[in-house]
Length: 221
Image 1 (cartoon, rainbow, N blue to C red):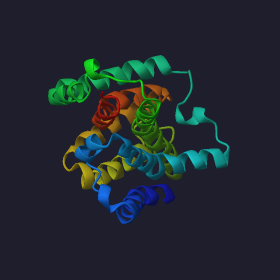
Image 2: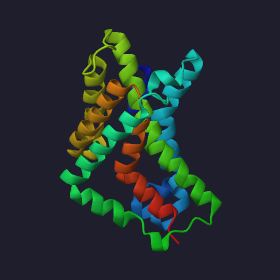
Image 3: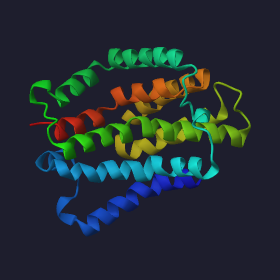
């Protein structure tokens, strides 16, 4: 409950603080980020603090093994193979997303000579990719423990987490939240089936368009 509440209120709280302290740079839309790529540090840190930080702290505090959350070698081949199918299906059903991703970053204009921007781009990839998937996997696993449904593939933890995750995304993504819920349902099923989260983490990193947008802004000449 603490994780869900912080996810709901954390981003709003951080945005309110930024707006109060730095009103001249809000809202932080893509136009503002393109005008000043250094501002990308704010949405990236917001994603880390409001989404992935609390589950990571709980894992460290409880001294849990990361293998419980699918960070292990066992099952990684099957996890990666199934996740690749999800990525292919995503781009097949939404070809416009593929065009949008490829247009976000140009190899001809790629510049990795600035350590600050390169480091921030890597942090953005980790925050909006693997860390977001870890957040969802953590919720699935611990909600399953709550409902005593860990042994089931299509479990109560998976369904409850996907329902709440989809509803929360409607506030920022509108109807696209349905697509996000379906994607994470598929990735959650892969985690439940293989007990490995590496494939889902890599798949979401590829499919999350905001990662490509941020990297395109940060790594452009």
